[in-house]
Length: 252
Image (tube, rainbow, N blue to C red):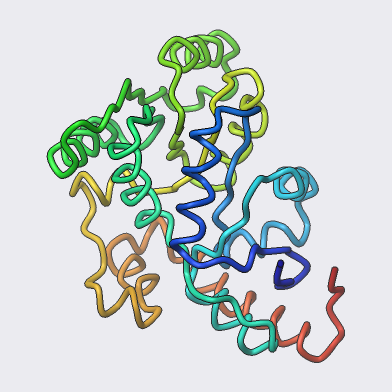
């Protein structure tokens, strides 16, 4: 079952069900697929970005990363069961990967963040097989030789799970353009998760995460980088949801 928020179809599944679905598919070693984790920023991009829409249409699983999406679903009378936060999903999937002997590859993040995350996660979950990490250079997506190198690294490592931390929509574009070639069962874009897990960037206290104020903590922590996303983006998202409630926004 899916929930329509501003024309974007989101899978109505709990955090535990998302983990179970992803791990089960990774264990089956079927054709490569990918997961997207929309937040309010994604919803805004999807209103006018046809390429991003195509990425979403082909996704294996679409799970609500942001608390505002859960609030919006309740306001619209189509309640999502809860948030499937990307960083929490990353950590939990690595925990399950260790139990099931699945191999993991970390791509992207700020320099040092992927390796730092690997160290933290392997300390927490002995036996976790992080087969490789790689931080590509800036603007690598325009360099065909660099893309070929990355793809070869991933294919050689044969991971079951690929976590891509390049920011949206860059990470989703890269996954969409390359997931069939790299042949990883499940690829997931996870934004700044490597920085959070490695401790490079502090994450909001748990009470702020649960109350939907993690965005405010991030804004205060990195105002120059994030002010447009939150100060301008959040009200725009709220307006789109209100228009959908009134029936004047196209709904799939």
